[in-house]
Length: 365
Image (cartoon, rainbow, N blue to C red; front, side, top):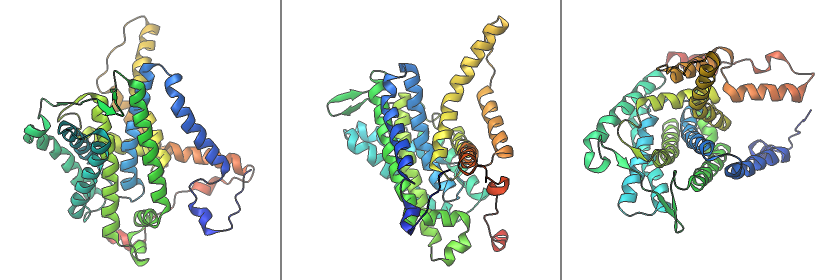
């Protein structure tokens, strides 16, 4: 059993809990860099897709998981990041400037949108952001001179340090671009959550009344959270466009927003790990179902039957199962298993009993 004796307040905000945790994460990063030499090209492409979804999941996790603001409109910010990057590159802006600049543009627009949107809360905020996600389809079509409208835009390859990087031509290099991006985003995210700003996010999520009593500016905190969330999402949108090769108004539909929200719920709300676990599920589920249908077809002696909506049906059943039996998601289940082994035989069944995270005064708001 590992027991941590904390002797200072600084130990509560350390980036890594102990040396063992640092070793495990270092090993994971090394393994990630070795993936191109372990997997074939097909599965390396799937891993790249998982990394991109994880970046988008981190963006929504910051807003929904750590600040408690439900959003069904992040597909709009994926589209904004994607088109911003594509337009900047068409204007001759190099990748190292266009890529972060698309994130900044998306974050600024997100903060502007947050001013009226965050006056709402709960289901009303979700509906408002959902409407925004639906509207972006029409905006892309109407702005055809810039976005290509229904015809769409072909994403140009990345030119970095004299090398041309493309998903199909140089999949290993493209994988490393996505990997380095998510390492930087995750490191920045973790440091934000250690800062007073990150603690303000969690305070607003748990109780706005208590957070305001402690001196937290609720409106400013929500706006900053929305802006940072959209900035991270913009990076994922740019990478999604590069990964897809071509994109139009139908690429970033409202279904993407719903998938993102379901992804972080299944992975585990309120944890960085949850974005990664959810991305693994949503990234590999289509391939798992496709391979499973082939095996079933071989077993019954016929061809695999295409079932419309199978992917979303299975994904929905997984979501329902987690909400009913494990509301804390995959990461929550892992924490319980790890704690059981660490505290055995002193583990108590009621240690993780769900607590109400609101005050009675907030029920009337």
